[in-house]
Length: 389
Image (tube, rainbow, N blue to C red; front, top):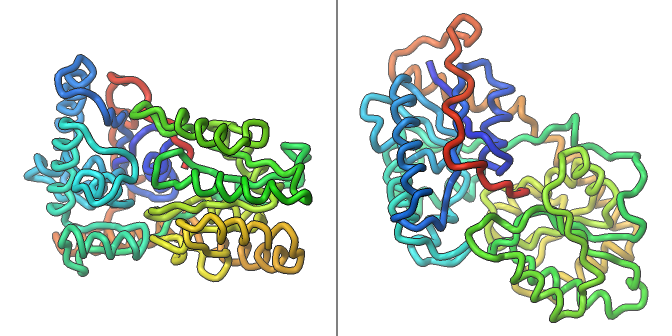
């Protein structure tokens, strides 16, 4: 039967695997798998990670059918000649960076290119791929040449016991716009800062703040320094609040009391924050590109992410039109209810059974199978990046 492989950490791919593990009745393995992007090829850290990777490979070889929930685990599929791999691909962002098609995060180092090339080969070798959106599926077909019949779209869920309208006191005294995510170029935070600057010229919004939740994006580059330069150049030093990583409970509170949540990303494989925000009764504004229109449906306002004037206008509409705001809240609550982990688990199990039937394997519930070791190895390279989705 299928063994689910999840990675430890608080990144979106880590959380995806962990949530699936909680909702699927199947054996699982939990890996410490930091992704040291930006590490020099010849360095002590690179050597430690190489040794760590070899130990991971030995452990994975013990299982016949694997579901690799973090697509950077695809590199191991290249060497798992006797194992069958189901792979979840969240996006092709790093590969677009590698191929020079865009710079969504940063240009990869030589060592990064080796790891990403191995990931690319592993994607092509996977027996079946779970894509987290139709947009990601389309990219897999168009850029990786994966046959459509080898891809199944299964949307993420969210935890509705956490993300719901919270009655707690407001986390900030001032009204605020909310942004949740890293400060990678693909997140397009600079466009939101420019739009916010335009809004602040209106005396009606003198008390309005912009709250930015989530760490800058790891140690790969000084993304925060770039953000602070933009904030200072726009004269917004006292108007932007940085909270870095927060718990899910606190995040739900932030969503619940925000005037709106804005995500003007240039690329998202799925995009958790808009769905979480909608579930908390928060109006949502997203860019009109990548997966975001697909995920939010008619429950969010959509804007050109390259047009800060349009973005400012959309925010202004939410701030000044009470009827529109209430309509967006109602639509958002309905839309968010469609994304659950129970549904994601059922559809994922459907993929498992389909692959098992092709291999002539009968499904056996996990509670009658000895579960593998729940945690594999001690951390060798430290904690993985804590990037707020």
